Length: 290
Image (cartoon, rainbow, N blue to C red; front, top):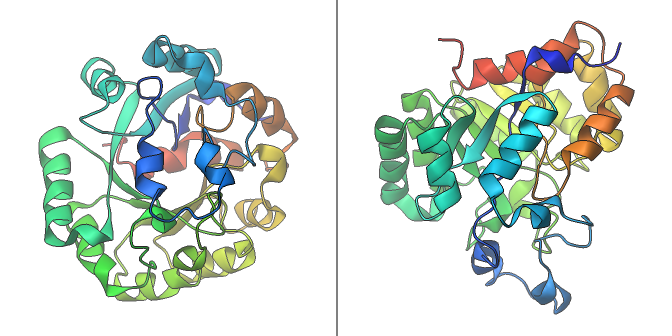
């Protein structure tokens, strides 16, 4: 069956491009990047992504993103909220029916990071925490105790945590993002809801084993064009994992909606899985069903 795009898709990873020329990602990763080629990248992993769609949205990024969402039937999108990003501020002020805010967290922030997260949820209506695991400086593996105050805060606030796992695209070490780290995390914090981002490869098989083991562990498809979704993830979604695998696009920072939605019909998900994958699982995780 072809995917039912008329269900009102919920995309669990959309970017709101900042002002043209903004290099915030470079400021974040700069201390870790050691190869000379990365210094000239316009995207943290330019060798993986070509013809970046975000470049088309420089004039009015918010209207452009909304236009593409409307064009492809994306009802709502999870976006990072940054008070310094005027586009994000306008999105959350004027389009709360289309965007759901997430707060970026960094384990190196200590108690201050937990206070920031708490304030974002209680004062700004943020519904999720996110982290670029290997991008923190210094890097902190997901099972290290520096994360634990943030995990406890997410549990207390009742919000999910989205974390990057697998070999990162930027040329920084993968060790902090090893999928096996989540085994201890889920053991120590059984009430924590964790959503894996960016594929988990080459440990996708282990990601499935851990999702079978831990009720709070989920998977999202961000940063992968549909033709490259790991087969083991598709098989899991079609069997015991229909409630655990969620759609996330990586638009427009790396992939266009044209590419994503042209390829999705070739993904061999079963009929009953499509609505869960495209909408229902994300709405449940973000608390959008009341």
